[in-house]
Image (tube, rainbow, N blue to C red; front, side, top):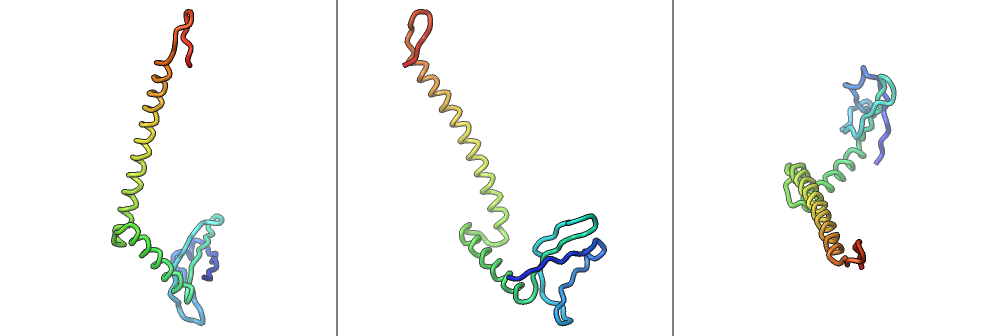
Length: 122
């Protein structure tokens, strides 16, 4: 895929057209970032690269939908739910590790024997 950055000022930011041989092409903005005060870098694809970009994007979207077993409009919700489930599982894991550490400490303490006025552990 071929794309090239287009550097423009603030006044042009809203009216970016990629033109080839005097005709407006199908295009899509990939990224936009400020590079200096009042200067923006916009990365876009156009023409054949646009078609390749859309086909590739659609391929990955279909794979994602198939893997998650959802429709394309449900992907965001499903991913958000998966992140929430992961966060809850991690919190539960941390709590169980803390309980396990306390239990191990109790097991070690229960094996202590009295030697003089102090306990030693085996």
